[in-house]
Image (cartoon, rainbow, N blue to C red; front, top):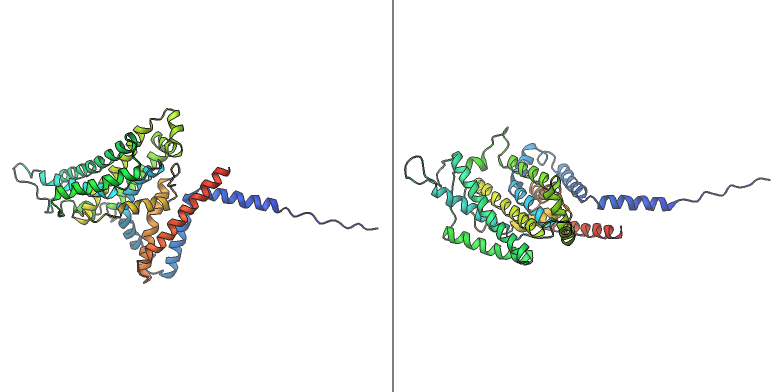
Length: 353
């Protein structure tokens, strides 16, 4: 008498658990998702235009194009991780430019009394030092006002920074009598190449990225920033001075904008009072694309760097492949929606444990 062996039951539960584990791992690392999206975009354009898009000179030009936005976005990352927002970035950039130009005009030339000619190509170490110091001061003032109003007066960041946006641009117009000023005194900084033919803007932006990474991920300042963004009341209970730290974060964001103002003045050789009206939205978009949660408590400098590159690569790829660059806004819009949706999934997954 033979006996038939019953088939073993299929363990579909294990496969489901594996899929859920993989999903949780992906959701827990938004930077990897953003990097994957950038890699797919680069591979797509590399296949469509292998002889043009993949040239080393093209990527160097891309890096130079995004350098100034990278500097701003590093500062914005800290602000958004605290669950804040900074709309005053354009005023920080413009005031940085204007303060630098005005400071150059006050700089004496040699031992005489002749004023420094800011429109001439008279680049000296002193002129660069004076200009960058003045630009950082302009951004610092904006950041200081933002920090005081947000942290101590408890005005919502959206309204506080919207106010300083208008006020800062107004001050710039007053100082400039409503017109822009040209200067070539900083041209070697913005258009020179001291390291192996690499444009100066690239290593400067890289230094800012490294400094931001160390400050956010390897210091007490960064840990406090994450803690406040996750739960400000809990951070206060463990001894963190929330108000003082928020003040420092907004000052950091303002200083980053001021530095961007100096770099843009060096690169374009002129102030541009109305030329950075969308810099705040570009920075916020880059930070959000990089996986930083608009609700606070989550974010990374590397993610922001990737987020800066996504719109730039899209625009560059569209131009090379003959697609109208206006489609960049459409593509970035959909990518941004996907990034925010992904953040919502991550938050729900975390809440479910």
